[in-house]
Length: 268
Image 1: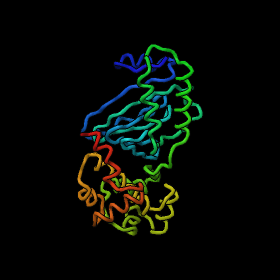
Image 2: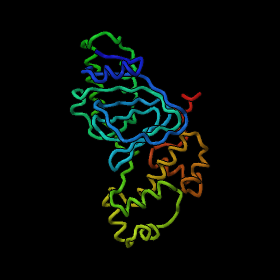
Image 3: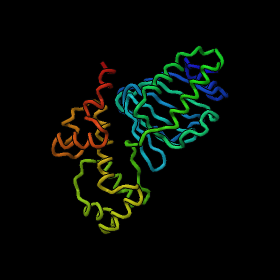
Image 4: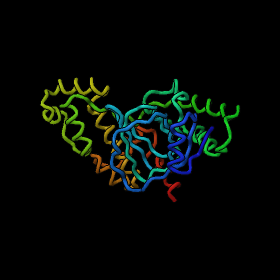
């Protein structure tokens, strides 16, 4: 059976059953939320976001999922999350059996049109009808799409070393901090060379590249709250709007205005 739950009790009852697929629409308040406590789900979650921004942290990695994209959270993945800009969309819960062979880490799908279409079809299913061959085929298509995530451009690895983590935390608190590499190495209590080597070894990218990614994360969060591009550029440490837009284009392949244009239409 497939169910579109109509209340929390119904969702709980079916969530704990062997129902292969559960689907429902959701909407959260517009204000930025605090981090939800770390938790996990026995089912895999596919989120089709139509509005807002979802930030997820699992282990020593952080992911950002903007609107008009789909996000995958595997079963039993311990994570904490928070939403920005009034998150809304649809969510599909897949049973552990359906999740076999699917990605073991959170991931995002930039080209989500087919996934959105599949989710919308599942939402429209008759809640009391068993899975017929057509529905089973659609679930197979869903699994195949989830198996092929895009390159995770909105992923921020977090260092485990206490000294490096202290630097990462300080920069996440103020991404506009323009201290140079020598200053940050001193802050960590390390030599410049040791700091550079240790940081890249921990997170898989240079310190400069990591700081740029952290600034992009902060910028996306502010843009999701509909703050002006000029204000965002200055807040994340750029001296000019054009330099910020060029960074944004290099990282995500488009400008901030185009990236959030579909979200703006949704908000109207």
